[in-house]
Image (cartoon, rainbow over all chains, first blue to last red):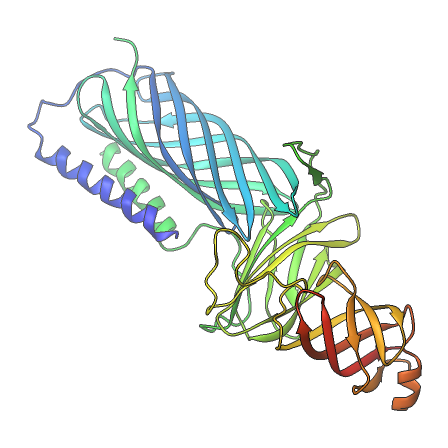
Length: 182
Length: 245
């Protein structure tokens, strides 16, 4: 299960890199750092469970290469007959030094995740939920299609602490970026 | 130049994910192919029963560990409450649950080669509550209606096949008794032990089979090995009864 999304992401990164290489020099939008919104498919793991969902994030420039990032994600899935859901809210900083068509970035986020588990037994639902704090480290690539739109692939390693244990979970996301402002 | 360094960093992160550098702690012990797989979820102390989506406060922060008795299989439950084993030898095995290193409960599981056991338990302050257990056999593919393969009233049991149960005698005598089977059945299992052999475990001094047989009465702790004769009525014909002294 873990390999599939990674392969898709790696392929996406590869295609983006190829397109960037094939693009004529000077075609890349040479824009300064501006606010942006991201939305896309997101995959993560909660312990042993594979979860799928949606990722949303917004960025606000703090400098030429540095941005403030707020990331919200929602995932769900099932494991061992139970339904799992995970909501994440994290904020942090992104560093993206390039201004070409292909723009790699690295980021570090701090925040929390709320994991809920429910199981239906004999017509009743038994549910449990926990809020845990954690951090996410990672990065990704933006491939700018024009001055407004870009494709993004990102990878996070999420460290979540709860129930006396640390989880080290991957998170992968692909989607579109819309640039705000001029 | 900075861009190249950053691309390298991103590639390194991706490589770490691909090579399994991430994810929850892997179970230790044998990783032999085949065997039985176990997927589990541990609910916390604050789990609630409801018809709606009422969510309880955060549960206890005890570290829960699961072991397979008599083997080196052991795994810590993840922060999200999940755990997983692969390659457990088929047959009957016992999952031991520990909270902060202290045993809080056991679940006896019988599963054939290639089976997938799915178990949900709740950990309260010092006890373990079995919420649900399903044994998906390889020759009985799982169905979405959750009824195929595990409709037996005795969890993990199959009519006509061998079974081992642990529990407390709820009623009856040594020839026929009702057994409250820990973690296996929500109703007492009717055990026909008229042809069974009896052994005593513990207690210090040797005890004859007859004395063991006489000690089977309400409240006695027993281990029953036999055949499940009915799934719908939870009936077992015992071959052997071990009495815990």
